[in-house]
Length: 195
Image (cartoon, rainbow, N blue to C red; front, side, top):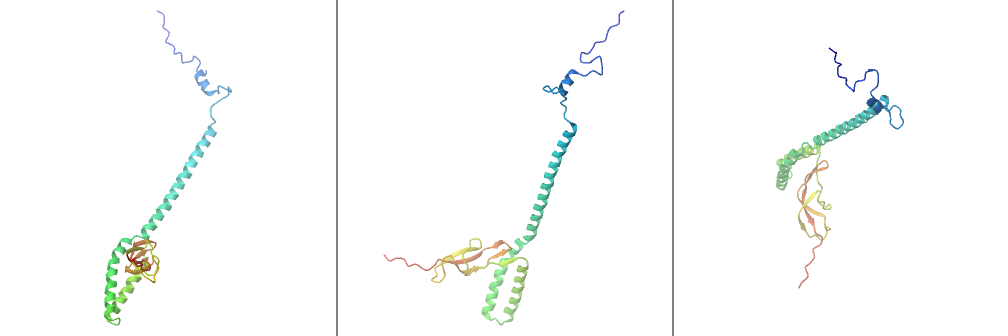
């Protein structure tokens, strides 16, 4: 009986220390014939530079996010009471009407003196919260601050100037809470030509 030889894999080399020609081709640069494997140190340095750049970008984005969040928080705190203060304005209008009626009765009456003290407190409260009244009468009409309810001719007031105010306007710091309702001068009256 003859002993059968086991099948030989053609990819396996008889010499375990011999290099695979396919691997050797990958390692050598075909043009120069030198070792083409990248230098691990240079490769690591390039990768570290990429990660460092990514870390700097992430830190800058985080810093910008923090600044934006702080700015938004300041805005929120600054204007948090806007709705409450805006709701208070019609009450203040009615209070002004009551003051006018008390003044017409007698400026020396206890009612007028008491209402004057309350009005002063309300005005101080509004001022402390950043609310200011919009100046209207005598100023040039500004559509960002004034709401024109009508126009009237005036021989002495130039066109585009506020003649009178029908309702007070208010700002909360640099934001408009409510425009002032005003009557604007249309300039001197022009007589219609007779036919």
